Image (tube, rainbow, N blue to C red):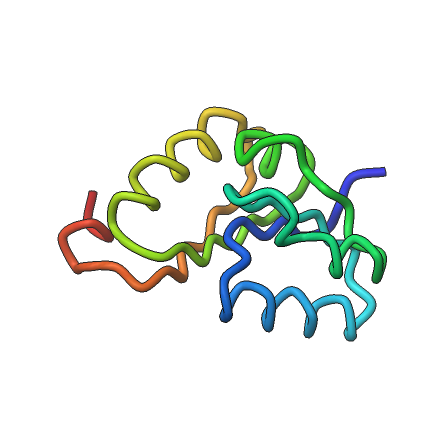
Length: 102
């Protein structure tokens, strides 16, 4: 079954957002560049994605909460490359205005 929401980036903010989505009963798929950061969320019912590129292939909406400009520039392209028509990317990372504009 496709997830309602995908979340990429499981740092402090990403984990907190993912936990709230699970608390609200949302179908959630997660991915992080560092293996193992998703273990507790998967144990709570989130589905582990094999790659960032799978996020919008499997969910209607993808939230990204990444650490810096370089991470966003790497991961956002992967997410968008796998996107289905009509899917939405919501970028929530701690990045510069210039990176947001790109």
